[in-house]
Image (cartoon, rainbow, N blue to C red; front, top):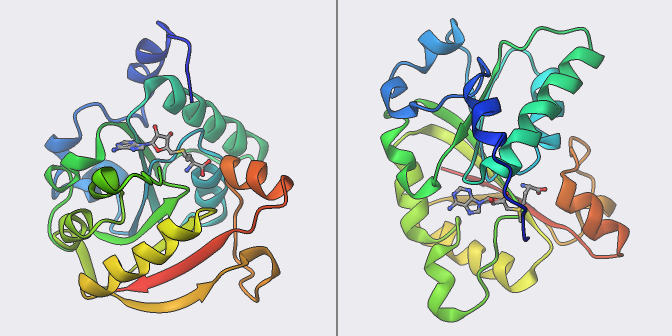
Length: 216
Ligand SMILES: C[S@@+](CC[C@H](N)C(=O)[O-])C[C@H]1O[C@@H](n2cnc3c(N)ncnc32)[C@H](O)[C@@H]1O
């Protein structure tokens, strides 16, 4: 996706009280940020934020952290969270957004600090030499394991079949058990789905969405 530079994006993010620009300082202290000990659900590559906003407003007993590298995209996630919470007459107290590169994720969370990870339409990196950049690649899964609680889950969905099938192998290799799997999420018996921006676009083009839950 080509994005026009938005010089206002960084100042808008920095002035928002649920955007965290110094996340390494909260490692092991996220319960102080959220002011409770509720479970933390993490979305990696949250994009424009529809999924995290709707999930967080619906599940106020969980804390949600969304990460994306692009300020120009995350700023829309910030606005989306504000809009969805306003429309539901709720205060925003269970969301944090972080502008950062996911490769540094283990510097942000301590052992057992996260209960679930969502990977929604992560970049598929189809070229063999780029496969290791995939957010489901074993080296990434090993990073996540450093802060995932025992028995925690990764929810992964994509429209890219090769990426999906390769990821099944990565999960198994890293010691995860595939607990739920469908090659056509929208026709499956899985009823808790929240659509993301990419999902809305791809499914409107007739593409099937693949989804799995991997348990540690
Ligand atoms: C294809 S988009 C999907 C966005 C959203 N999850 C959805 O389903 O609509 C992938 C997003 O992940 C972000 N992203 C990809 N790799 C990343 C990385 N290594 N660190 C942080 N963000 C990343 C991109 O900036 C982009 O917003």
